[in-house]
Image 1 (cartoon, rainbow, N blue to C red):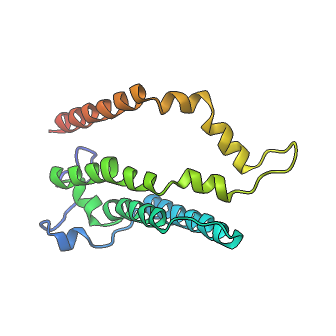
Image 2 (cartoon, rainbow, N blue to C red):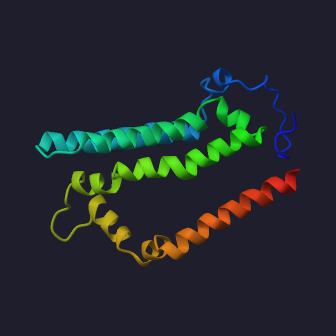
Length: 167
């Protein structure tokens, strides 16, 4: 089968859900997901050791969000998504609609701000760098609704035109 015009050939058996859910790791996403879970777990553990509470629901939301990314990127769904438009669209919808909501409900930035240690007087640590980034002009632009809605709409058109040009 032609691999979406990328010059790669991929012979896959007919799609079934069982075949689609077979483990097929993409190292970039596998390492990213494991790193995200590890860092989040470190933050929760640090808060608990200090005696601070962190809602279980946030941990569950974040974990499920990371697992949804792993599900569509580290299984054969990723392979089938390269050759089947329907599977590709399931990936697209999970990654652009479901995963971000779950990840944000986990409040990873709030966790980082609470878990990272405060740097000493007149020094800059990871927490201070994160605060600088959050209050920067760059973040004000890319988090503004006009920008985010425009990017979302542009991504839909880019998907449409990239798919129609390979047909």
